[in-house]
Image (cartoon, rainbow, N blue to C red):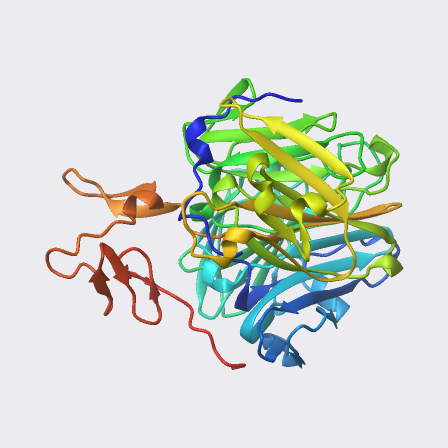
Length: 512
């Protein structure tokens, strides 16, 4: 059983833990990265929408700049809805600004997962509601040997995007070298597609003057590099302000050869601890690690980092499943309830789907999976990790059928409080030469906030959002935009968020 030095303070659970997963929402905006192009066959692309409301849920999916739309309703308790979309949404205008942005709106909370399938090549990724989209991102992906794509989508207002390149990319028919800066203006619902040649794109910084959606992918990378066979990979990125500092990585079910991972730093002077090994990274620098066996791994950092994890190709261990990609959920964004869909992709070659659950072992008795207690689930694969303060972390895997599923802790039926059991869950589908990974649910709460310094000249500095939660209500009202102050906290008016109600929120619309 592996043993890792993990600072004890990282394992604080309490009222910061969200009640449920934040990937549920009512408006999503995204683009489809292209799949492997050999043979020029058209991909099958689409979305899986799951409703969780006890009311009828109305959903509208459209491509605003193409006047293309679909409408459907989901009854309470109905199966996830699989909507197939036109395949040319993945292929138009690589290296340019395109009109292929997809918008999903609903009148009740839903989860949305996107997929892109070709023969022996497939990817899935969980979409993020636009209310949790940010302004600063860093690229992490693997692309060798066939390249990759970066997609930047504007939401509902004109957006100026700045791209500080670490690698070579194609844009509007020209190749731009490392160190170059691309500035591009996007109209509402336009998507910028950059063609990526090599892995040196990792660490590229992307910022916008307003919130933007960033999706990355490898066309068909070999993982590890040089080991066939390849597979399409894709993921939607989380903005820097929602990154974490502690990550727990699990082996994937029914594999023998371990996995690879990337750590990307968002700020200078970030010290990353990988077990007994430490590495200092500056902004945009990254580390690629390879775990050659089925051991869990912990990663901690002094400043927020992003971690991407990859399953390996079939030829690495001659087990089912080619490369797949997962944005690892930090411990700070673990949740106490997820509701997620699993679809039947047997026609694409998927023969088994697994759910993996990572949590602290002594609290797993609080977790329920569908109608079963945690200890009643016939777990097929079990992996453990021991922390420096003798906490035991469990990763458990079992096969799962198509349909809607719920994973929750019993305390999630009560008011969230100290000691609530939190976890992360991921879905892993495999076939002979195909695989996919996606997060079943996760938190998206801000972890890095901006505040004035305590010393003159009182410039804005980055601080932990946890340090900004308490408000002094004894004097004049510190809550902005019509918010009210009570019990050392602001209650914000509709349309505003943040500790002092200073942040505007996206207002849900009823199928607008």
